Image 1 (cartoon, protein in one colour):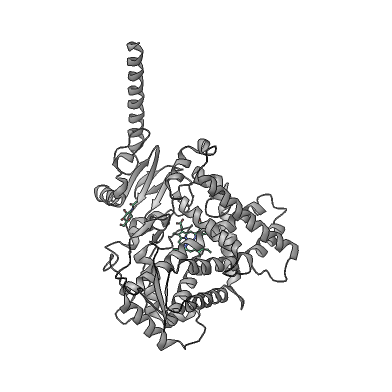
Image 2 (image 1 turned 90 degrees about the horizontal axis):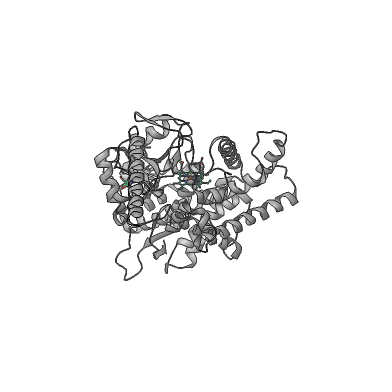
Length: 490
Ligand code: HEM
Ligand SMILES: *[C@@H]1O[C@H](CO)[C@@H](O)[C@H](O)[C@H]1NC(C)=O
């Protein structure tokens, strides 16, 4: 008996050693990093309570490019503006893939824009970009939709008459309505319960997307598929969102094609028709439904979170708030419709918006990429299929690029004469072939929402409240803790 267990133990130990040696062999050409162990990889170096400090320490030891093993998978992490920028743009095509985890594989099934690579991604992305551009043109263009939502938001705050309120829901409602206008061609009232469920479902999916439950699902997908838990609710949410989109598509079909396409679905239906004889076409209803999902997913959480930080930053920096209001009052009439073009006359306001995005770095470490072929990063040969994380925060806080990286300081985007200056290190929307597809729409939203709110209100702490927690919660985005403020009409 003893002989047998000794044999087993010996076998396990030798297996472990063989695996260990294999891993060290795999490491020899990868960027440096802590020694990986079989099965757990580098989990042993991670102090999960102090993840940030561990990672900063690793960057200090190993430099701006290092390898971290998440279990059996090596992940290359890029830190610092120059390394991140070069990593995303020098061999832009090589690093244009998106890794898929079992969770997102089950949800997106290789369709749409965010979670695809190669041919499907190229077609869907190009079409998405073109459609956003087409929708921006003309009088009923996108900008007009954003202006309309900004007015609704101002009205909503007005009704509260300066009483303490949590601005999260009105903000996410307005931002989601912008995407609804783009995709469906119409908005939803604040009473519409179905649209509430849409908003809550996306929120639930984003939160799940960075939870322990998701990690479990990605490690044991076959097992988890048969177990109850939050992942089952996520699949339910996803199904609800898909049928919501399908319903809108059906309405569009029933109404027939308009003279001029008015929204994403109109354009997509026309495209399906146009390419029905092309065997390489990926334009079909499944891709359309997933692309709609992607626009909502990518377009609401990020913009909403940035606006929630905006309100907090103004409360924390009343001097900045006052200066923005002075500039707006000097340049704009009290009821003049504000246009995106007006930012050129409002350099300080524009600088403040950029600083809010830089300082709060909402997308955190950015969205992972995958090499679609072998490539070279900072001199290291990288194999096809390797996952890369370009740490966008590290560019936005790079001490070599910013005067006071960890302080809120709108002067980062102003020259000595008060003119607005763009900064290369402003990578909030990433860079390269997968740079944020909605960048222009997002910039328009941030500018129009912010300037309309600042013209109408002063944000203040509720009476008796001394300070607000400004630490971030890490979901997929870096979010503020829930808070209440007063929007005092000016
Ligand atoms: C403040 C607001 C926003 C920020 C900070 C932001 C940032 C980003 C970032 C960092 C990425 C990842 C790029 C990469 O892979 O390197 C991304 C991708 C994307 N964003 Fe945005 N985004 C914002 C708003 C929007 C909006 C409003 C839309 C909707 C029209 C949108 C649509 C997308 C899409 C579809 C992708 C995936 C692109 C692809 O995989 O090719 N984003 N965004
Ligand atoms: C990304 O950069 C930020 C700022 O330098 C740092 O705090 C964080 O730990 C970095 N994350 C990773 C994964 O390297």
